[in-house]
Structures are given as structure tokens and as C-alpha cells.
Image 1 (cartoon, rainbow, N blue to C red):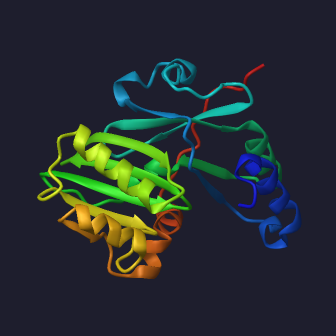
Image 2: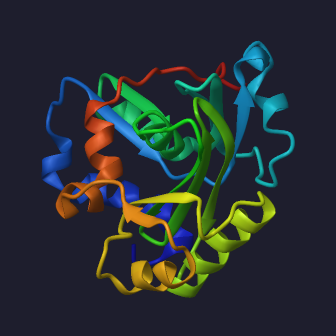
Length: 224
């Protein structure tokens, strides 16, 4: 991404110039790394998406509100660019959407103890903490540097009172053994390891899981 603050225009332009994206696909799956989200227990599923996002700092204007259900009794309610959604719907007959959190939550391996899952994808760090089949914590951070990855990882563990010497921490995405940021983390987190042995699959973890995940096309009613 050449201009992070102008990402909508860049993505839409890519659809215009990349002929491989303009083919007649039977079905398209799109996942969004959106910081405009809330993790909401399923018992609040009847509430409007607007109400469920009231605690988010992002603006509702020009955003399409959607939700992704997860396997752990919670849903990710989030907003993405209405302009981008409109363009996707114009280009493809069937589009299924989800938040990147769903891909991580629905595909990880959990244990009966608290675990930390770190997924780094293009300077966006997802931190997920699970305890058996329960989500203890999920958040998404912009991390331009390896020091940022370290800071947010240690800060989250400190706030949740997780011991960096004993808590099992699994890594995904660009957090691969031998990479500088991984080695920085390993200096401070003793029980750190890759979630998968295959580096190629791990590096593109979210993309591989997107192809396998069954997504729902659930969203708010069109706004007038």
C-alpha cells in the first residue's frame, strides 16, 4: 500500500487495472482488517449494529456495518468503507464478507489453559487470548515497527496478568522463527512458538483460512 491514508482509492483502482480481479467468479470472499469493531456476546445479537458499535471511536458516516459470527459464542461487529462494498457488489454477483478476527478465532487450536495468539499481517497485529472455548481478549493494533509488536504483546499480557515465562504464545502471519521481530519477542516471551511448521502457509495464514472458512453475508439494513 503506497498511501495508507488513501487505501480505499488504491484498492478500488486495483480492481480497475488488474484484469485478473475482473473475471467472472462464482463466489468471492473478502476479509477486512478493520479497527472499527466490537466483540459482542451472541446474546446481544438482536441489538442493532449501530448500538453495538457505539463504544467504538470510529465514525459511522460512509461505513457499511456488518457482523461475523465466530465459533466461541461471540460475534465481531464492524464497519468498512461503503464505497468499497458498493464496488465489490458491482463487480461480483456473490460476495461473502468477514472480519479478520473471525479467520483467526475460528481456525486456531486451543487448550484448557489460557493461550495467546499473535497474528501479524502487513503491520497490523491481532492479539487473541483464549481460555478453552472462551475469548478472553481480542484487539487489533497498528504496528509499524518490531518494537511496536513487542510493546503491544507485552502490554496485553501484563494487563491480563499472563506470565511471560509460562503462558503459551502461538504466532501466525509474518511472525516466523528467524525473522527479526520474532526473535525480539522470544527474548521476552519464553514459551513462544510458531502455530504451524510450514512457513509459507503461516506467512499467508489469514489468506489460506479465508479460502476454507464458511462465511455469512450478514449486515445491517441499507441506510437511507
